[in-house]
Length: 213
Image (cartoon, rainbow, N blue to C red; front, side):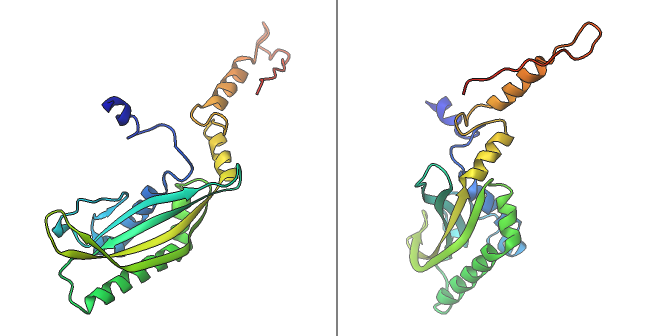
C-alpha cells in the first residue's frame, strides 16, 4: 500500500485541470515581498491542522470544492485562503489585522500580473478571484494551546477553460481520450520511422496510413 500511495506524491500525469491551482497560488504568494514579510515561510498549499502556537500568523491555501457541468467549456472550483492570527492580539487588532490582510489579498488577486503568473502554471485558467468573499468571525486552536486563534477565511473562485486544457494536453503529446499516455508522441515517432529512403538516399514515395480512433 505504501508504494502505491507514494506514486501519488510525484505523479507524471495530472488528475484534473485544476490540480495545480493551490500550489501555483502559494508559489506566487511566497514570491510577493509583502506576503513574505507577514508570513515568512508559513504559507502552505494544504489544509494544515497541526500548527503550533508559535507558527502564527500563518496562511493555508487549499481547494475544497469544484464542479464540471458539461463535457466541454469549464471546470469551476473554489480556493480557500485561511489566515490564522496569534491568540495574543489586542482587542483593536482583532478587527484591524484581518481587515489589512483581507485587503492585501484582494488587491493581489485583482492584479493582472499575478493572474498571468498563476495562469502560466495552470493551463486553461480563465478566472481567478472574480468571486471573492470572506468571513472574519472564525477561530482555530493550535495543537499545543487552548486559546482560540482568530481565523479569517477568504473564498475565491477559479475557472478553467477545458478547451484550452485539451490544447495543452496535445502540446504534451496527450489527448482527452488518453490523458495519461503520450500517444501523440508515439504517432509522430511512427511517422518519422516511415519516412523510407531509396537506394540513392532520396525520400521514397509517401505512404498514407490511417490510424483508427
